[in-house]
Image (tube, rainbow, N blue to C red; front, side, top):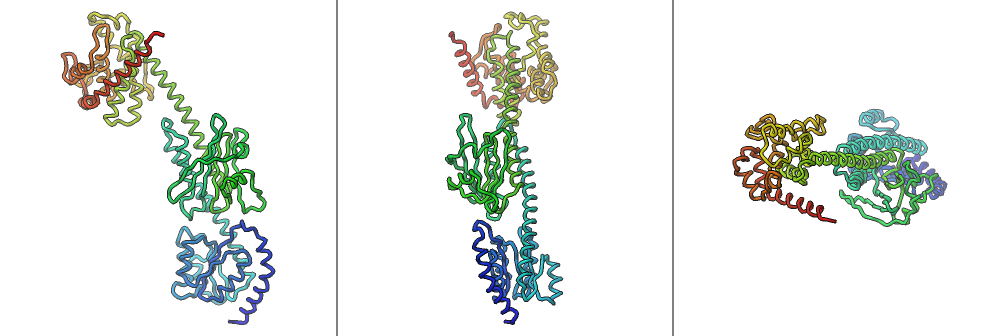
Length: 542
């Protein structure tokens, strides 16, 4: 060993006693930067270890390029000090492998060279080396370069983390909006989905929390707490009991608050909430908290210090979900009012057709049943259930004396009856949201063979909703007693629709609709019986 190396070792050993006191006083809570030293000469490794370990660095020493790559791929390395001249895989090859891997390219690589090794330095720049250290080692130079590179890596990591947070926030936001369906919106399912997207699912996802805790205040003032833990690729959700004052976890006003805490920050005292979480066996090294007056989300133990960007991500996804929850309620309230208005108008159209009872409700259920059997889209099924109730709204313009006439109608009276289809389409208008109701009103008396009214349309020129409604309306009309006819039972009605009776013929109906009726006709009978049972209960004297 050279004399210079012995002098350096002596200097390092003498300095250890001075630096150990400082290192012992360093908080054990701080995560030590992990430095990988790669050299086939154990004496060089010993020198680097003697320099770095007393300064609080976690030193990993390996003797060749293969072992170095194993550490890079399996451990979280902050800096790699890499000797160029090694047997097998040399330092230049290792550096190139590190820098070609997107997961590891932010790791600073310092190549160890001799002062006169100009060619290897140039090649080192080509393969992506961040810095160089010359032999023999100068302690102050080594420590200064490491400190500088750790600072650069910290800045790069923060930039990379911020980019990931922006990308993740955009992806989560896009999915939240894309999946939004007010009719099926379930707030807890949405929270579960968000947690699955932000929680850590593998060791190397340092930008994600290990634990997520959700708190919700119910209408009675009680609080439900849920804890989410990642178990492999699965997320475990469990209800937990936490005796935490509402003031610690929830905002005192309707204005949300967002906080973040890092245990390694010597100036940050653990909050009362952190202490309470630890009392409930939830160890907190860092966390981000979103709080409103009734909802609290706490993301705990990221793989690095948390920043304002992490707080922004949590706040944004939670606020989007809370907004969609409120929006879903408003949409459903509006939809409910819309449906109520439709049924009210439909009821008004029945005022002079009193024997039909709940005809408008039944035909909606018949139509939905057939549409579902025809595998129509779910929106179509729901729309026809509601909007078909307006099929006879045009009867408001027909005189009660005609609607309730028990004898044979004159030609003029019959023409007025047929006009109710046109009147209905005019009343409903051409608003896009009411297009189905408009189509049903004007076409539900058209026949597949072209013998219907008001326009004598045939086949698929008749809107599918009109073709469905034609059969449903005829079925219910035959089942009901009218001033001009008695009621038919289900079997008689089924026979007339499928075989004909001189007035009604199977050719009047779309073959596909008729085939669907053949398969579900018993359900028609059930719907009719159930609604009649309800009518009878309602009509009982008080």
